[in-house]
Image (cartoon, rainbow, N blue to C red; front, side, top):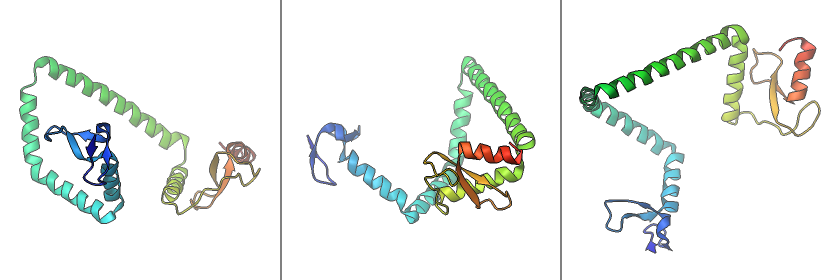
Length: 177
């Protein structure tokens, strides 16, 4: 049993994160209190921007040191390790080239760019809660997973919320995918 310094409640040791530099080997604040503190820091926009600024300053301040450390590390690599790293890079490059080709195909051949832009704007508005997605299809009035159907891609936020079945029927009527 250990007493949390934040909530002042005796709790089991499993409720405390390990900390080697403490005499007990555990943090002085329980994990529940730690999580509450972290969440409150992330929710406060001022603290969040201050943290980002500090990280940016720290990055700029220690940039040269990190570059030097990487150079020293790379010089001390064995030939076998160096070869393994090169093979991993080649595999990643091949994978990235495949992804680039797929993305080009997607952008050029499959979908119109206006459609992609309209879908992105709609998803952004949903994420920001500027648009609220209903629970029921606006055609069949069933409660299902819904798609946003754009009648006009020039107006990306004007959509009809329909189930997949009704969405496919709309596209079938209009003769497009």
